[in-house]
Length: 260
Image (cartoon, rainbow, N blue to C red; front, side, top):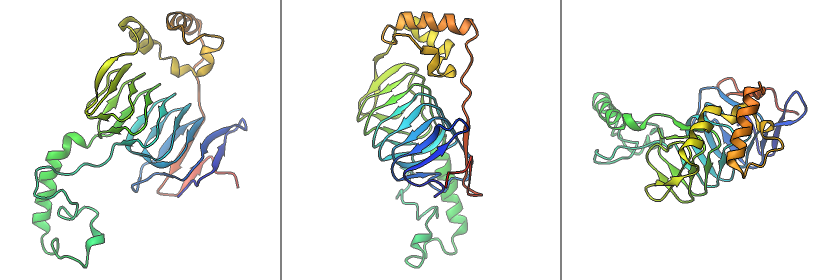
């Protein structure tokens, strides 16, 4: 484990770049790829594997977040999320990982099913790979997304910018930007804003500029806020450039290093 509970990584400005409050496994499920985390970022606890995590986002308790291509900025991730997990065959006699000999070393000595059956095991793997191909993609979560508690999200799904996932939902399909979805399976209940506002927000991408672009703005008045964003971006408001934290799970290094 590269980073333990109650760890903080300080950035060059002396501020907390990454705050890990509770037991957290970053690079879970034997991740080999480098993980990049924009700062600031806060994690309350859970198991997480993925490639890119955006600034000003936070993850709360007991999250299992796997196979993440990217999680955008300003996201609020509720407790007990189960997302991007591995899937098993639903057409074979059994979905158990023993039979295709995937990570089944724990069964050695109890069964010789896979011993001397290399060709058959390869056939099983190949057939299941075809079955699961559409569900092997990585999970993408946009910017400014709110995911409520006790949500499940299928691997390979894309959650659009500004979307809201209601508590207890099971998300099996992509969620459009600024859609509010809920249910089992999740369906679109409504959209957060009118179409013309959504189109402007997707063009403006206010999250690229950090929270300071909204300084002095009443964000509950969305029409006015969009107008201010247009003016400030047109005037050349600078984009937010975060410092990055890089976790290399192969070489077991953290950049910048943890304070001792």
